[in-house]
Length: 107
Image 1 (cartoon, rainbow, N blue to C red):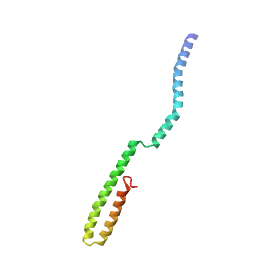
Image 2 (cartoon, rainbow, N blue to C red):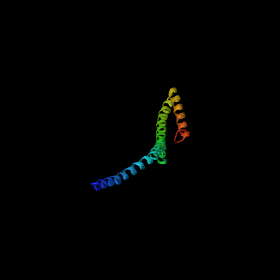
Image 3 (spheres, helix red, strand yellow):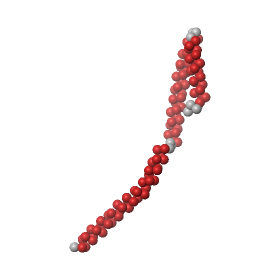
Image 4 (cartoon, rainbow, N blue to C red):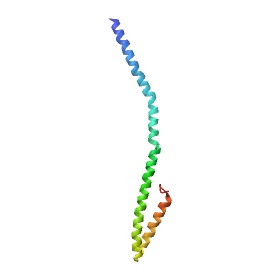
């Protein structure tokens, strides 16, 4: 009767040994995985930075295009003698100049 019990006990010990080893590896690698996830979340990849720069550039170009159209309309009104339109045109021109000098990021 002791032989079957010893056999079961030996098999259980072997089976549990794999589980314990797996659990130990999980406990050891958990801090490494946590730090790695934190670093990934805190850093921006080069492709992500390039995409953001491209979006910023397109937004800047769209804004300059809108300002240019508004500037042309105000200049037409200014030519017709509308002093307020002349002032608006000057303000629009100054904003366009600032965007053109600032570069893609608007610096």
